[in-house]
Length: 184
Image (cartoon, rainbow, N blue to C red):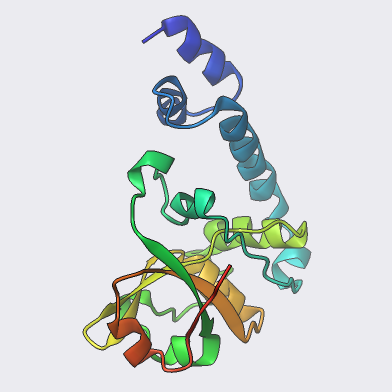
């Protein structure tokens, strides 16, 4: 590892963990810098009550090259699942969630403000985010990654959202009877 390279990346505003991922060539430095700059701007943006009460239309990124982003902190080479995109009826999905995947507080409550705010910021700009990753779990649905995205879309009254799912999770379609595989 080059100390000079680590210093250069940190001067660009990257946290050391992200800088190491760039040095390991797990992510591209241009993408990492843009992503972390967006996080800083979104942190300032969400502090406005006006932004917290506005309504945005969810926009989804269903590019398989970006599916790893549904999991916080994953690198592209760490997300090797065989994934499909399914369209989920939100009202059905909400009623089938496990307790752990449910939500009892509003998206902009202090518990959820940061993550919900970053997603809302993207949607305010018309930028897409990766869909949530769901799986079947004891005849219910668990959100493996993207809980805040799922509940924020529900908050904004989305009627249907794309979700990522493992191709071999056949129980999902028994639980979510209205879900449909999206064909690209």
